Image 1 (cartoon, rainbow over the protein chains, first blue to last red):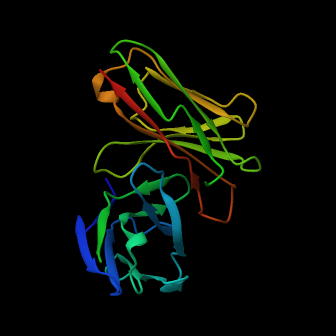
Image 2 (image 1 turned 120 degrees about the vertical axis):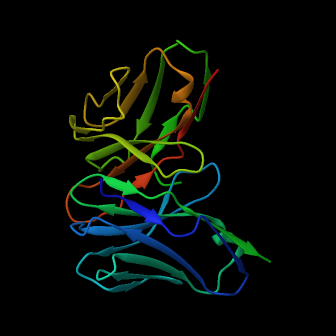
Length: 110
Length: 114
């Protein structure tokens, strides 16, 4: 079946550096792609979303890029901080509901 | 705090017992979702409601699972005759229908079946 997946399960980044978390998807009919952040013991927290007709969207310290040609989604975090340490999930929506990938654990090294 | 609350936060139960979880969504949200998450995995969709109507159920939702949202506000998820494989975090989320993709998640209920 069609699914959302992630390239790397873990990512370690030095504090202050930029982080890039990647995600591959296979459902080209999805309407939205979303990035969620999940800290230990908490539910997923919405970070940013992007419509399927967009290539790029920027938020506060975060940028999401969508490459529909290769079905690839990335989350860029600028000036990574210790508070960014968490598991990051990409998810897609076609209709309802959200379909989540496995997740990437981001560890920030102080 | 996202505004979605779940109760209890933790539940330990013996195999074969029934358990019920409650979710209170953000008050103006008409959609409510239940997800299950096991360690190291992303949340897996179980079911969702629009107002009081249950619109979709995953095939993960066996006949031991039932969810209700009787007045279109809070929801309950019941698991009958629990099995060790039911041990997971059960997450509730809510959103407005149409337009935004943003769903707000609660803190989850961690179920341990012993």
